[in-house]
Image (cartoon, rainbow, N blue to C red):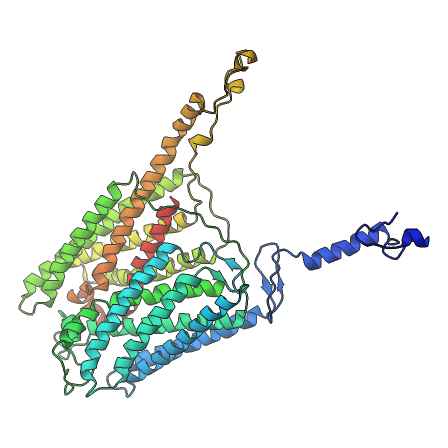
Length: 591
């Protein structure tokens, strides 16, 4: 009989076993194991022209040359950021020959190169079926991409207003200032489509090129962000010409009326320039957040290049069922904050207001912020207490999206921590004399407490497993078990229905309220904190600068030092609030 069933031979007719049949059992087992290791390696990914992968038990591929690709892409990112930072800093000084036109030329080149690479990536992955075999289910959730689209649309509107405004200065100013918003508009369109369709991708082909392209995208967005933040900060904190008058600066009026688009001799050729300037000024915060959202999503894609993972769609639905107190209280908080913010801003802009009126407006702003952070701190304490009685397991899976969320949350909060601690030192050193100083000190202390509590609440929520409800339909009565004292004959000939047992239903109902009240309180807290962070983002993003409207810190640290502290810390504080909104929404969905 032939010993090799998969190979037809003539060993029976020839009178002797052939070579495959003469192999010992041990030799066959050794060869089969060798072939199995070569052909059925777990997670083996084939790619043309790419290094081989060695996938360990952790599921993370060890790619030959991956460190080289990461190093090259990192070098590209660092060099672009350093050059961009140098140009942004140089263009901020009026007495330097490098102006805004040279900076815009550099950014236009970056925008064009990044757009070209993204178009190439979209076309290449569309033609290659195996270019993206794996997707990260945690990366780029639909609500995050929806926020990106919303900020992108508002950025496009801002670019349109810029084009309409800069077109009035073409006869006397550089044409680069019109070309820049045009190129940026195209870039926003291409990038929004690119991130919407490929945010979850784990690229498997041309990994090193993809890493470099994503780092180019990341650095381009960060340079655009640095430029917008620097321009915004300078407009809000222009050093006064009169050293004796270092407070009550009208930065917004100086920004709108100042000829930053040409010199004093350059006049707009149409009458709508001032309207467009004022309009796109209020759209700057959305463009800033768009750049940061895009940077974060590009970084996640860079981390996922060559990653072998399965796409897990959790299908978590967004609904506000049984959640009432948090949304109502949050909406009331936002409405109150907006009302006081509008009054405060109008008093700061008015040139005929006396010092007493402005001090009352600053006091109202301080009191409103104290109320907001106090209520947010109390609600966060309640949420943290729920975590103590919550027995959900912590997520053990390694995920770059969650790691980035935590890193950005903690890192961005340092900006507000810096401002608060500098304020505390200034108030304590000067004795906190006067009601404005005492309110400012209380606000700074409460802000530190609120930031610490909220960071703990969000990080703990991101690392908890989602709640799982017990489905009553799946609990079926077993009459043989629940009624052992009855004879089996009474069930013969009768229909065996599958209704839920009253005993089991009562048992499940007994445990359901414990699950529901925890979930409900967590959802209430998440919604309230989310809306609280929204109003705390709106006020500084749209021009509230109590740090300069109240003069104690300015006199204590001197204007230049205090302006540097605020201009560095405040952009991170603004981003922290928007990032907290996104993280709290994620915690809400998993609660």
